[in-house]
Length: 554
Image (spheres, rainbow, N blue to C red):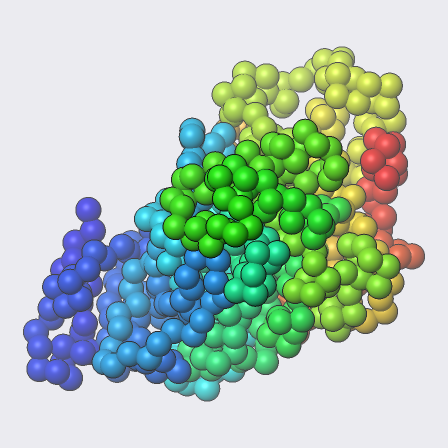
């Protein structure tokens, strides 16, 4: 149990003639400390943690020489309405507890990856437009790079604090950067296209993205007071967060609000659903609720649970109709207005993103280990104990008559790995990354850099390998904080140094090179340079193209 006596308004107490009064008594609200962080002194002090925003004053807290502001409201929004600026307030608002998460579908069981990607779930509300800030200094003209994190979970699940690894304290301190994480509307609340049902609903196809735009506008208008540079903002996200990064690069409303972009395991071949599919989902959803075009406004009064169920049923019907193969859930809507199409009407990079430097990559195994499988099953059939004959049987089980060619190409691409490792290689996500890198390079604008994170965590004898989300603790310099995932040993600390410094360097200059890595060239169609993050990191050129060809995925 957190002891409220550890948290006091030290500076405010002195200046106001107050004793060290517990924060909970001061604000009459439940205090939620930063979950999963190291034990350390945690104080709020008005003389160094008070910041004036364009709506009013905020009081944060300081720990380990990093100031943090949690649960900062960046906008307000009624259901299916566009986000609006926060109304001004008098006095000082405390910013020491996370804001509400956005509603998501029920989590029916513990995920297979809970040990590897430790999660936390806090109260949810449709009033969920909150962000969190970690900064080394405020009101100091620091002009620091700003790194805005977009969480994973597709366009349906997740939150700014869902993973313990998202804590921004260590990254802010290590890189002298300002780290921002944020919540935004998800699933049916963020991406139900009701635009055919009246002018009030014109923006509904991408309200979740409009929330992010509102957050970026808040950053533009306020981050200087938090020690950040509004003209040097990097958006970065993993999985669905990477998809949001890609969508924002083609949103006119987001133009000029960020200056660099990082996509981590978020470059599948599709960034959104066609406008026609989104319209059909809305039509089916209204029908499932017993609503018509004339009564569509009543959807704003339906319970979230009923709303979600109607939307889920709509996607099931859409799948049965088979008119839009591959559209199976909520995502950005490519309407040509809010989210632009490329010049060929497809999913390429639009001109808006031409001058945005891009860092894009994958982890080696993505969903092939602990995401799709139970750790107990992976331990029972431990790949580290496979004899060569058994490994070849497993490869044939997965790849059929392509097994020998895949094995040979894998070992050529990753000479430090084993034959058994080839069975777990990701072949679903990597083609999308290379496709996006190629298109970005062909634009002839700002550079694109690619990476592959292949470091194998020692946890549970390495059965997780480089799983989906494995790089996140290292990006945030949180290898020790999330040691159930990383092991927390010297190899984990070393890879965390290399990865986090690359992200920091990219946020600062648009180039991820730093002294701890070999020279990392930008990706070109001709050489296909990719940084391999491992115990011995190195750059390889078109290293896995033969592997993808052997598997028949490109």
